Image (cartoon, rainbow, N blue to C red; front, top):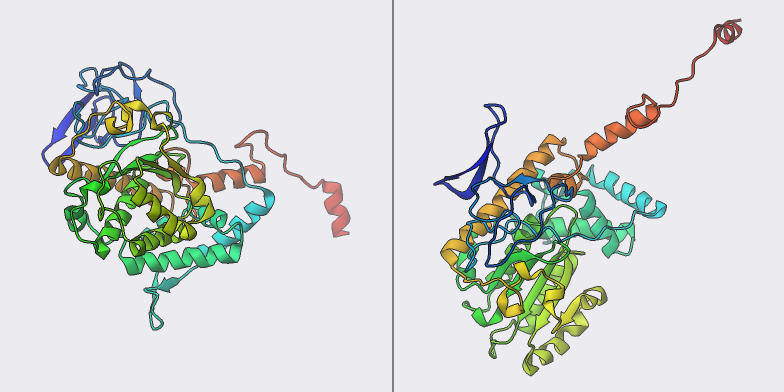
Length: 419
């Protein structure tokens, strides 16, 4: 029997499974799960068909008295208008499968992993006289298998360049204070909803809407910190199997002076290309006025060719994002009203819960550098478990498939050796 409880100190609905042992801990429905069982109507339209055996996401059973569908639920259950983020992608959103590594790529990854496992420390800043400091647990957790592969791909599989870039990002994250910028510190930057993380595209990428016309602060470093903060929240909410995010920007209501300066644009591109490589899956821009076109022409020389390929102008976004999770102003069905007092704590509580769950899995898996991001996000096994299974299989004990029989010496052979 599963029921919903809400606690004053936690705005997220808490699933209570009464069929489990008395000491079991109920978990909030923030695991990107699909519902199993009864369907409900939410957001003003019929829900998509349930997929009861979908292995892409950990399952969450929908209670019989649920007020909104778990197929398309928001954090606070709001529907018309939506006020808080969607908890998970629609069941039809499917991350693309990456091809397996070639033998050469696997060799280079193994080499980079072996190095990263034994990095004792990194610089605390990029200044010439900066001191070293040991890697923290959060930094070791950041060094996942997929993280190292992203840098290798970005470096065109040049291992030396990938190694240097990973270490440079570790230094940048420390110097920039990526983990120190709290929700309270950034809050004022998002009071008007100029950046909104809401819904997922057809491949399960979190959608980050940029609304330049809602700019409410002066052009300072904190605006860049705000963008970095929202990129980190997108990463927190990635479903298993997805590594990239989608940026959606509408310039229709923008006025002169609303957008970033050329210096800010260059700084943003530098951060995205050097410290978030292979993270941008789509960048969709709508209603670009002539003055913004001029701006794009100015910054185009600074944009990496791979990034350029991911930029789409005036595309039909209903072909990229399910209408059930796409804002109406972009052609979707979602009526959204930004309420900072409702949205901001809901987003950050959801993200904090996901981070806590990933940290617990990382610790349970042995605190490994090179851990699997799919495992950290709730699907699959830890690399420690996989290593142990591979070891047993190699030893031939029959744990996986048919074991290889152990060779035994015959008495006659032993006698011959003794003589």
